[in-house]
Length: 366
Image 1 (cartoon, rainbow, N blue to C red):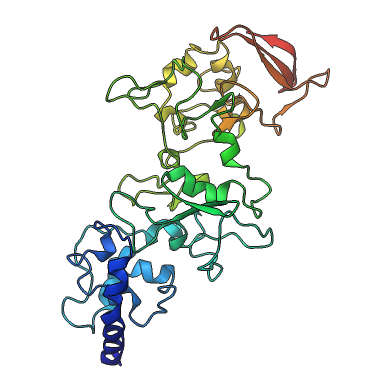
Image 2: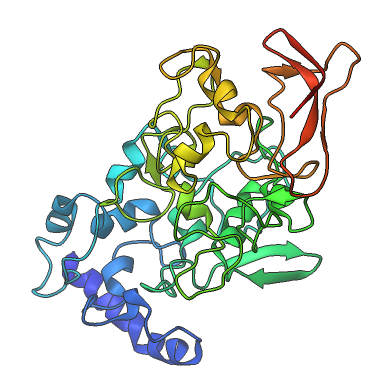
């Protein structure tokens, strides 16, 4: 049976080189590297549907538990199995508590689908081929060959990581109710945003740790970040990318969003990757930072509130300084007002009109 499959695939591949020669496949595409995949196309497509390649179950033969590769190719000719030992076990990421639904929502992906999704009834899904084109992917560009979003009758190509994320996390008609449009939040026209699409507006973020800078001046300065800087595995030894994590929202570090909790390096570990904890608790940019985060009990107390209570993690269409109040904790004040008003420019002064923890801000100035 195996011999018949090999003959059938070989016959198919007689004409395939002509198609490959005409296709703009990059020379560094890893799956077309005969040193790594000596049997070529038949390595993945043998006994599988040529149109789909077999789905994520095919991918984890090489990119999952190493024993899978041994079992799958044990009866195949010598040197048929993929070579090399630089593959990581991505299968382990998809059994973590927080993960993309690659193996949770099977059989939904359509080869001709266009994202963002236009049908609100369509279940959310994320198969390997939604983010990676197996014929184009390279070590340098994990999302090479992926179609971008549709704008009118034109479908662009993905060139930046955030463009790939926007395919499902921006204008999708089936976006879950608790989720927001990330394209709108990261828009460069907003008063404030984390610098994903471009450098931020605030030129005085005094809590930034090196090598992060508001503006890139020297070669080692980092003035923009990527979605993958915050979203991905908690382990540096795992495959890069937002496949799975032990932290909520597939975050690389812990980010506690609750109210009435203690401030610790772990509670806001994600924020403290870029922002100096001593600067924040030293009230260098906001003189009541420590009071809000640690609570009235100070260090070691458990009455503080999360960074998330006052700040958006992505961007704020309404305010500077990523201010966007969590309405499950913050509510309008006695006059029905819920807003922040800046006083001066780059002076770290302003007024808050709101009610929080039973304290009426009408306003509270700093």
